[in-house]
Image (tube, rainbow over all chains, first blue to last red; front, side, top):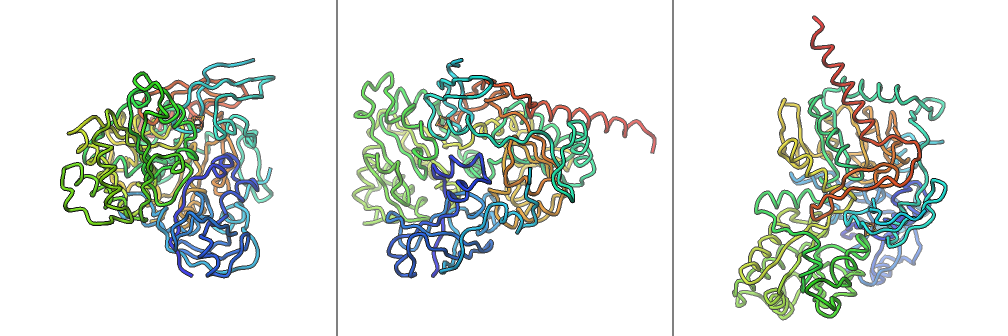
Length: 129
Length: 435
Ligand code: SF4
């Protein structure tokens, strides 16, 4: 199903932002909020895994209900998971479309990978003390 | 030991009334801070010293080697990018800009992915700004548009608006009217007197409708504008016109959505329109601790607030071309120095991919997502915790942050000063030596 994704700050994401490699940060930034109606239409329950595909790429997330979202919209906290979907186009402003990302959401297996795994996928070398 | 009036190094509210208890060179208690600020004082995961990845793992290197590597990288690059700056002091920011000038590089800040569009709009139509003290003491109508201060700037309401009594408002909670405009009912919307629930991408249209109403052109307003009823728009128009002093705050709900800087231009023009009736001001809800400071320093030094390219031998500014995301997406830079930010976590995937293909040095206290792309990371003190330094609050007021711990790390300004000095020394050698 197609949705419009917008990303933004949350207090959980803000609290974990100083330790981006922690499970808390992953849990705070890899949860996709959807309206309960859209979840029902997509055959999803709270905590299910979804594969989200956007103009920037694909990423597996878990889903949670948020009755306050506008229908047809999904929300993801700022962070590397949202940025895996975000395109680089800035429309000559320097600012990507962090709050207007067309995405496809489908049921999936598994759970969100760690931030290190996301970075490895982009060619990074995770730090090991 | 109890330290009074400590400045919080997390967000651009720069609360300067924190009580911090320090025992044995460790923070054991933080009073007056919100959750975000308290976490920052107690965060661990500092890197012990400079590190670089090798085939066998991550090796420690000396400070001298680390500075030498950084200087080599910057001097041998054709198109170096120097990026970050939002969580460090203006002293460090100033050195970063001078380094960029010295090497003919591009210097950009996290501004380009937060309130860059606000600056573009301000450059077009001006900034009707004020200090937060004015808001606290005078504002009887407050608008938060496309921002959620309860989650992003948790003490903004209690220090400056709804829950803060002021000189002319003895019972602020009762005397102030709070209007929140957003595409979803946020925590901040829950405490508002009036919630303007607009459709995504409808900000420009709703702001235009309010401008028409304030001008007295109510006949042209249709029954709904981007999901907002005519009746509500007329009501808000009246509240705004009848304010004694109105304060319009806005966040990335305006800067990052469709229309970007045009939304902010329209908001400024609404404030301009309202000033024909009463007094109104507008303030961007700047996010990080000292992101605003970079714009101040960069403007003094170069004439431009961010995204400055020195490759022509003079300062050139063209957001969309000289901004970090665009430069990385075009795979244009051939080296990157990151200071006090984490672009790998906050830039779109394709922009981050280029970081894996070029040499990257990061100057940052903690291991973060950008560490994975580093050829070298130099840990430094956190400004406002174990280094002092000046930062600019979201309203442009400079505040001196204290050093409250000594953990043995250098301030980023110390490292940058050495890098700058070595670059200048090496260039001098090159200049005098016959080829
Ligand atoms: S509102 Fe911002 S500056 Fe104030 S305590 Fe919270 S995080 Fe720190």
